Image: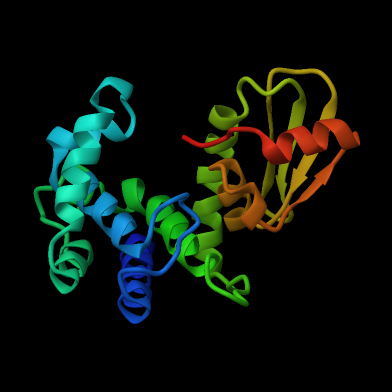
Amino acid sequence: MPRYARSEREALTDLMSSLGPDAPTLNEGWTTRDLAAHLVVRERRPDAAAGILIGPLRDYAERVRREIAAQDWADLLAEVRRPPVWSPVSNPLTDELANTMEFFIHHEDVRRAQPEWQPRALPTGLEQVLWRRAATLARMALRRFPAEVSVRAPGLGEVTAGRGGEALGLIGAPGELVLFLSGRQRASRVQVEGGAESADRLRSANLGF
């Protein structure tokens, strides 16, 4: 069985190693060192990882992340590359479900922040996995958006999301849809169909999770 979470993790770690700790990412204000520390917190510090999603814990999570980011770059990358088997999100039972989309997105966060990047040709199996994630993500990310958005990956499927109203179409490859729906609209290559005003609103909406 393909292990896409592992392959994306390895590719991301290799890329960060080649670029160094100060390379830009799509994550505003974050270098590759910051991103690596975020991944370590998520996998190795459950006491702080909750702050990634829960507002009142965010300051604590950020303090922990900064402490981890200050360690030796090679040691930091080693922790990203080899997560502990006890990690709630990276053990053998949860790794594919919890990390395939996570590491695909962050791999692209680094790739697409570099000059002259180009989209990758993804394995068919990974595209199928990302489409399933995109379909779920669309319902979450667009639940308050004031339109009826048809999200389509040609050849794979279509889901409808949004609060209802004007009809829009969001069309692209699964990976591009995942990036768009996770708040990386400017870096994704998708087609938005519909009224110009609503389409522009979708392109600039706060869709992050």
